[in-house]
Image (cartoon, rainbow, N blue to C red):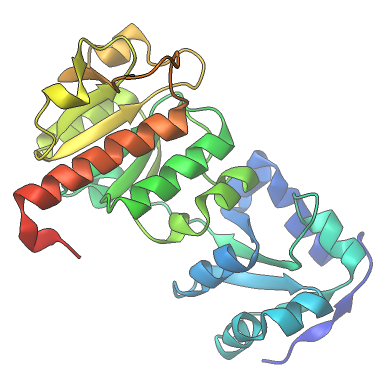
Length: 274
């Protein structure tokens, strides 16, 4: 399929249809979202049928020719756009000139977390999209089996969340809009122990057996996890602070917890090392 003519009018129907995906209501109605930047578009293209359209400036087309060519070979419509149109579509101050419209990729909780899962990240009341995307990226890097967004957490298809995830949204199973109690019941039924990461915990990472299959529950950036969610956990665990810092931010604490579990599991089972 050949690339179409360059779009220069920000009011064109095709541009307006893509631009409205910046709003959650339209994303949910169309079951589609925007993936911005070469990393996200490249990873989205690796999944058959996920990318439905690509928008690219002339400069980005030259710089990322392999991505554009892959889209064309797959029969994905590629629209050349002016810098003005890309600025209208993009949600960043300095757009990278490449953006894709993608179909939703989340799966049901039972599919995301089957029996045999070893490490899962659960985001409960996580509201900041940058933090959520960073935790998703960290879970991917740590080799987690899945990430669960509860119904009180940010939309994983929020543009900032997608960018912060740096393509990880397309790498591992993600379940969204899950009631936290239903999630806890399913995770425990799948053989996972539930550890709530919270500064109120009496136990620290040094006190628990992290080699066991674990679902880590991470809470709100400002006020942590409410009591009703702490009560769902098998244990409340805090990251030990050895220096004088008052606390760690959510994304950093999640990275410490997930990597501590990943390392313990690999030490206990050398066969799982990559």
